[in-house]
Image (cartoon, rainbow, N blue to C red; front, side):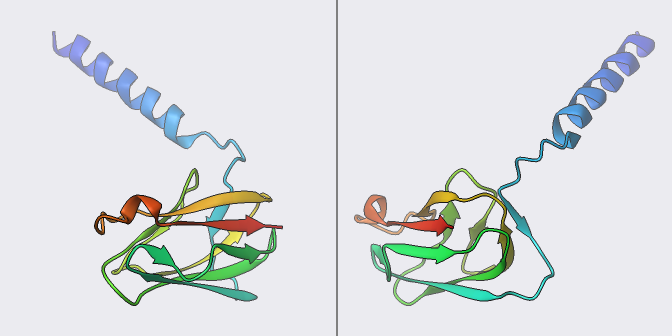
Length: 123
């Protein structure tokens, strides 16, 4: 019984390592230590961001900063591995793939929360 259990644990670990460790090359954004060539500051107030669109260049490091002027907010770049919060409000990242990405508030901030969105355009 112990051998079967050990075998099952080993198979489960192998499956999880295979699923998590594969390099697919699909990372659209990557955190970096590079010096940013651009700063994108997103100012959040109750139920809106200060701009409908933000623009960055593909392949260039930029610093993304969230400034909550009114209320408590966070942001998530939808479909990507990038988010900011009040406690972690700045990241320097590189956009590796051109496209338009939705920026949404990921903190339930009140009645207008669902309308709180903008776009990040990677050119």
